[in-house]
Image (cartoon, rainbow, N blue to C red):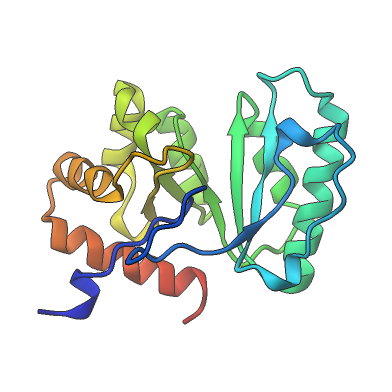
Length: 195
């Protein structure tokens, strides 16, 4: 059997597991934007993130946007991709990102509309789907609309969730085999990191 059919990528997890390919990340989450956290060592991570904007939380938006821009600047300088946390701030986030030359953009835990998915895809971004994504009928439609070459799966912050469960459900929604989904996501991983 082809090795790519056996590799499982978890593009965004807080709980890396053996046997699953997960990039290392460094970033300041928008929820922490007012806490005065020192900038992480972006040089020694695979991907900058999570970073982004969350307009549903009580953190000052101007502070979130400043830190978001700083982290995008670091990603641009170091030629690293970014993993985004974006809640109720899709348009502001994509408008800010457009000012930077970022090697790869992944919207993690995507729970947006089909229209937002199509706009992100038009810009060449990736969408990552996890447990919350699978609970929303509008997001399930976004999964259908997302081409395999722009799709990732994740477990995010759930230590009990097996990434294989997410893959199985996404494969069923996409109407593809589990082996095909694994192969395509692994190709996406190699493209994202220029491997």
